[in-house]
Image 1: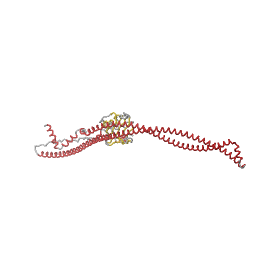
Image 2 (image 1 turned 60 degrees about the vertical axis):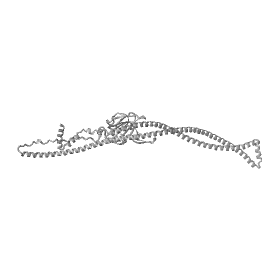
Image 3 (image 1 turned 135 degrees about the horizontal axis):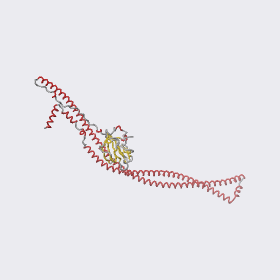
Image 4 (image 1 turned 90 degrees about the vertical axis):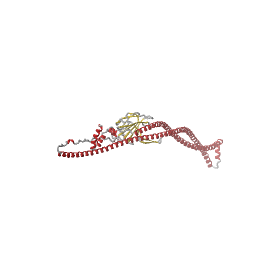
Length: 495
């Protein structure tokens, strides 16, 4: 009963002066804003996280297969590279030997022609030499048998002295000519024989060299065939490994696309939550406008009622003064209506990045001047799509891969809030940092972490250290996102 009486006592005057909407407005404004800002956990986000864990588990198994195939391919590629170098050397040596043998054979062919030509000349000279020698021999025998008397007989047998003189001169000339021709033929025969012997010696040497070169050529040819056989086997294995890697890369790409879809889904959830907050604030703003209008209307009605009451009181006082024995009522009996002062209205910021702005500079203004996440590293793979000509595949990188020693400190490029920490077999430990204006930075392949989820961090604060890759060494993967759009990190980082 007391509660009912209190309610009635409050309701009647409020209803009388149409102040109930204004009181409700003040009650609504007085609600704790922290409760209005609190957002229930979205079930869709939980479903997305569970699905991501399942996808990452599958990706972990695929990464193991990919590492195994990549190791085999690396071994095969090294063997193939060595075999290719050896084979190329053998081919070069074979070409040199073939060219040398060809030149030697051409030279030997010319020697054969020279030997044949000299042999023909030698045979001709020998024939002439035999004929001249035979004539000279007969002449010498005749001279030996018949002596100088034979010449005298020829001279005395002449018909005249002039003929005898001519015969004497001719016989002397013939004797000298025969001796000279015989001597020339003998010298020519000696020269031809020496030339023939020299050519035959050179021919034998060249023949021996060609024989040795042909032997080496056969050896190199056998080695070439063996290396080509090994190379064919290596290429076959490489093709198999490349096919396995391409298939795994295809699956990995599909899963990465799925993970990217999950990231986009998270972005949609965040965007939907922002839109819901915006609608709440918009509805609150409209309600405040409506209540303000109602307050002004109530104030106007209150002033009107007060004016009417004042006029009514004055009329009653005039009437009371005209009636004897009655005293006028005190002016203090005026109704004291409660005066509502306007309360300051707290407005929730439309952007949830207010706490990030305290630790982060304007991210867009830092274009081209952000510090690198690691020091002393080398960019091993750049942003975008890169074609592998050997494997005939295209590798797509959403960020950059920086090669560094194992255990290198990894630091935040700008202040922000750690919104996600996860583990993926492909990229190891992952940290995602949110910055103002919907910017995200991603740090992957971290061995150990130095931050926690929902922690607000400053620029250059230590996030973790680089982890070890399965094939050795360490690579830090770094990405920058503007909402749902991938950015080229090298364009943002300090040059």
